[in-house]
Length: 173
Image (cartoon, rainbow, N blue to C red; front, side, top):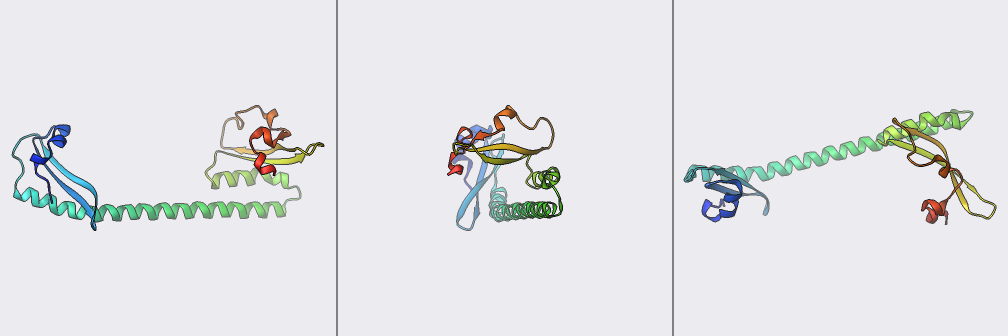
């Protein structure tokens, strides 16, 4: 039920209104918002306007829920499209690696395809080795980036870097 201006003093002062009608926007039994009409002049509400606000607010809730559902569906479709693009890129990678005599030669195109499919700005491949004392090490083997310098840290730090120095010790276990 719309609320008359006399009950909305705080609301009216916030929006500099002298006449105000406010009706709940509902969906089922749940209030999901409010429709508020205000006017700077006093005495601008009437029965017709009150009924109009009531009718409009009753239809806005289901419309908003419908629009939200459409937005959720669009996001789901986009996520499925992203998933399909990534799966296509993985399939492309497998095909390239199987066809290539030297899989390193295929890496630039594979990393580019994976990066673009995942909407990433950078893709790196690291290769592991083990030091004579048994410590697990990793080194940057290949990289792809959309533009600009790829690494923002000293590239020498990514040659035979111990996992524990990179914060990856749990992966080494």
